[in-house]
Amino acid sequence: MVMSPDYNILVIGMGNIGTFLLPGYRQLLGDKVETNVFGVRNNPAKVAELQARMPFKISAGNTAQLLREKHPDVVIVSTPPKIIPDVIENDLKPYFAEAREKGWNLPDIYTFGPTPAPQLYLDNLGDDVRVVKFLPSMAHTKKGVPLEKLGAGFLVFGTPFPKDREERAFELSNMFSQTFAVTQDQSLTGLASKTVTYTNANNACVIADALRDMGIDANINDIASVYRAAFRKHAGLEGEGLYPCSESDLPEKIGCFVKRLSAAWYDGILRYILSTGIPEDLARGFHNGNFEVFALAAQLSTREELDKDTAQRATKGGVTEKSMTTWSTYFKAPLYQAVQDWMNDTLNESFFDSAEGVAYMMDMTVNRHAYRLANK
Ligand SMILES: NC(=O)c1ccc[n+]([C@@H]2O[C@H](COP(=O)([O-])OP(=O)(O)OC[C@H]3O[C@@H](n4cnc5c(N)ncnc54)[C@H](OP(=O)(O)O)[C@@H]3O)[C@@H](O)[C@H]2O)c1
Image (cartoon, rainbow, N blue to C red):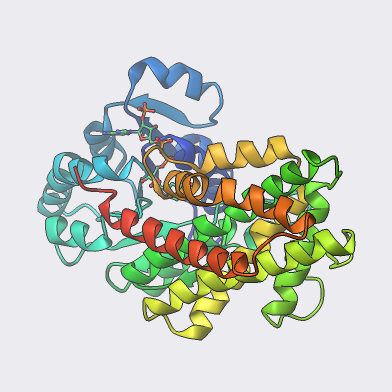
């Protein structure tokens, strides 16, 4: 806890992210969470249901009133991206004007939409506003393995923060991610590439399905173990990482396919990241963390758990949804077919080059989509 927990936090947007952050509110405020956090959603009819799950006060449609009553030190903006410009214009702008006039402290703004960029807050609220964008990893502890310690999360500071306030933002981010402070453009590339690494689990599931339909039993967790061991070797990482994995967890023939796919998928994503101009050490830093974590998630989960994780991560119309639909459109069926062709010794070598290209193309597609999220 870097700052004394005697301040209020207002959360505008109590959906997936607003509720997911609960352990972070506890980290910042300790047992003051119940009294010092205020959550706002849009739909009054859904307040009671959420109130039953949350330890602090939930309400709907009263952001302007809560700002004036609570004078929060931190305002979290976690509405869908398209709503954020309205929140800035209708709620924050009048409050910041009044706060300046009356000499109230201006809150730090923690914004969670990939877009708009922090700059939109500065343009509308003034250059002296402290705003930082968060893109948490969304990995979480599985079977005692703290995936969030390695999964990459991004912070984009709109303007420099005083040291203690910067540390508070890192403290919250570090609860959910291995934190990288980056520029707005770098954050969107990082986010897009992360959503493509989510498909490590999809790849493992399709390989298992294709084999099952040929009468070959292969467990998703074993496929993911080989996929991850191969990635670690390919990326030049020492040892087994956070959890044991082995290239010999599958019969040799299937294992060979999985290893080649893992390397192709890793390289395709990395190539796209580098093509945007991100320095190689930064690119490998966050890409290695994400590739490891989302292969390991597949190693540690049941299929049902993997489906649930994807559903929880996917904001409607957002980048995760785009990644999943792009993968389903361009890779699911070809991968299924390739597995069966491989087992029948009829797969053309070029499949792995194409797979690398699909990973690159997916990353590009999702990254471009990220820039459009806040457009009306
Ligand atoms: N999901 C992820 O993995 C993830 C990761 C990083 C960042 N993000 C970003 O975080 C933000 C939230 O995503 P999410 O997945 O949590 O979305 P979500 O589940 O759809 O939640 C959005 C919430 O915003 C509320 N809301 C809408 N308009 C509002 C307004 N004018 N005032 C107050 N509340 C309002 C909604 O209320 P009602 O439910 O009552 O309509 C809902 O509770 C998005 O910008 C997303 O891009 C998401």
